Image (tube, rainbow, N blue to C red; front, side, top):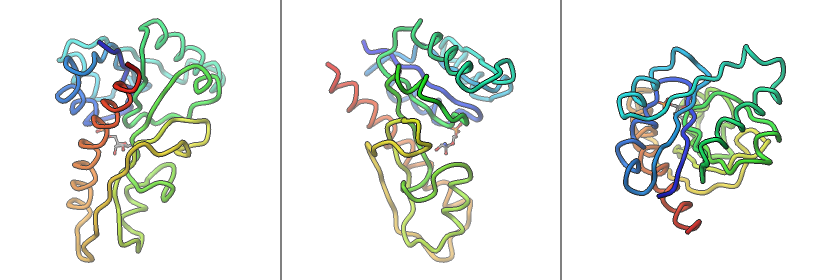
Amino acid sequence: MKRIAVLFSGEGGNLQNLIETVHGNTCHIVCALTDNPNANGIIKAKHAGIDVRVLEHRHFKTREAFDQHLVAILQSYCIDLCVMAGFMRIVTPVFTSQLKAINIHPSLLPRFKGAHALERSFYSADPLAGATVHHVTEELDGGAVILQQAFQRDTDESFQSFHKKIRAIEYEILPKAIIGLLNDLK
Ligand code: GRF
């Protein structure tokens, strides 16, 4: 069975969704890695019996040194794919030159790259919103799009309801993208 690692920084909602959708059937999540020792996702991964690794950037002088260590940890798990799901770190070529990685982003890229995409998308006048799974390159949220799903916005929608719709899309397209990519590797 194919092996993936999931990288996260906070809640781990996408991580939990992957545990429920792909873990143990299309692939094994062999490692859940975070840069945040207080991330709630840690509990979710441990509960599922997944190896958790914490790598704090404050222990490294440069982004490259952090990435070097990150790559070494992930390579030690012999992964086929690295999945970033709410991992709040920008990676350098040290990472991208050595690992195949994808990321989930809560907007219709190339709209709203970077931080606070959900809020920026909500407060925009764009008639459509959605989420994107894309390849990770050294350009922040700039890699080729793998899957994207949109919905037509309601003009009087609350932020909470908007967020819920984005979440639902994320939970649908991230597992789909993983299954598709891992199938292509066969
Ligand atoms: C998701 O909306 C993801 O698109 C963004 O960060 C959020 C992570 O949430 N990059 P969670 O940790 O998966 O709950």
